[in-house]
Length: 285
Image (cartoon, rainbow, N blue to C red; front, top):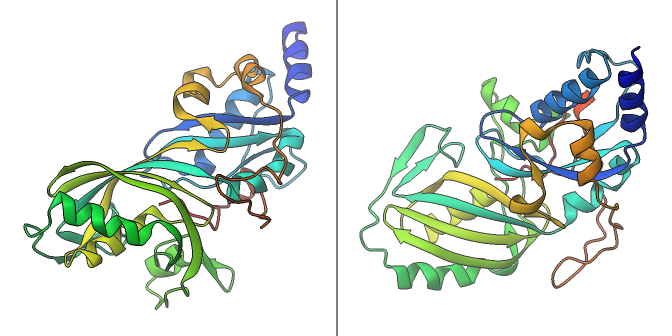
């Protein structure tokens, strides 16, 4: 190994903590971690094979899945930082979501097939904003069928694609700290959302459409903040996925007891490991 690579390897091995990367639309969160690992290990002359199950040369995990069509902040744990990712799964997150009234899809987003169309010309901005109040605070929410939640060890989204019958998971308690209508240009509307762990933006938009005596789905989703990491200040674009940039971006690992706005969640969740190609059960959309 060349002297430069040896120095870089020492820097890489010393990285322990949390940082954020920008996930673009298209790849899965696991794909993003594999690309990141390939880039970091490539700097020190090590080829990464994501299919190998042997001892990992670099330990990475993410703190909460972003669906393939979504973009924005993806928090990454490196080294010992992976032990702190449970606080990211249960912590506060912010999203900007663009929804479309009048069309419902099987996946509740734009990647799915249209299964229903309804009129929406009766919906006013005032009516919309009034309905939002019902979805603020501690609410019950049914997760989407197309999700990474599992039945008998298999993700529901995989079972559906294989043609299996899948029953909806029971409603569960989630928290919405703030929910505002930023733009209303029917059929499109834009929401700013701050929520706790386990919340599905896709379910929110679908439920909103029904509450408005119509239907709706998510056209675009951006995670703008997760925990202490926000999109503008902290999310590294792919061209900056280098050892030095990661080292400059590392932040102290937050304690799992750090409070969310309004309350603290003590629920623990397993960090998501790209080596196992897992998606978080808290599928964020």
